[in-house]
Image (cartoon, rainbow, N blue to C red; front, side, top):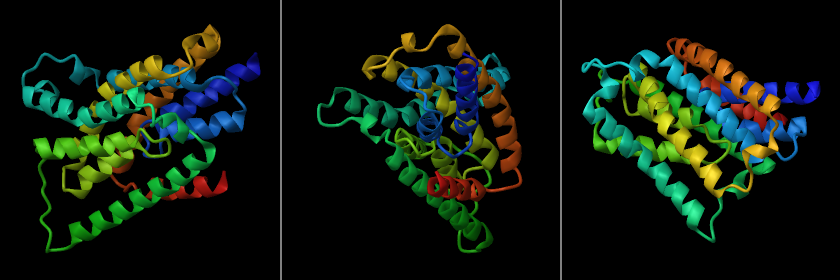
Length: 265
């Protein structure tokens, strides 16, 4: 029993850290479930772990989510519209996967595919970070200093977010890297990337409940509680760390990590 609880504590740690770090939570869950030899957890473990990180986002931004101030950006009507638009690509891909007889995202939850995806994710992060550094130092490119939502940008942010439905591809890495690449203000794109995560995580939970072969009954109460609490706690502190880290450093370091772990495991 203690070994089982320890395994789910580790899975919660992995989910809490990798959900927000640009290194793919779903990819790491696949790798660590295999490494820890956790059988039959499957989608039920992912659902519980995602609940933990969902609540960590809401708790971290609680002053924004539960604010009644009209000046708060998140509750501005245009921002809500942009978040809705950004969620559309993931919804469409999820519906296509759920109802299509010839397409199934779960076939990508394969150990070897995840390793390749992590390698590609790392290369993408390093490439975009390098290109952005070149653009910032160049006098040819303009460097916008103020965040501004528009329909086109929101939709493209949503497309990059939808890519992360593939295990091994990081949602936060795709969204934030694209936002920085097109010149959006770092502080704002990080904040909105995590706001975008709330409806997507909620929808992914619904998706797994509707279309997955697994359910909650496969994990007992105690292991499930350990998984939820560990993903919540580690997710909360990971958010704090990541925001402070990105104030000084780029995503390239996370890209290097993805490449190394894809080659080592």
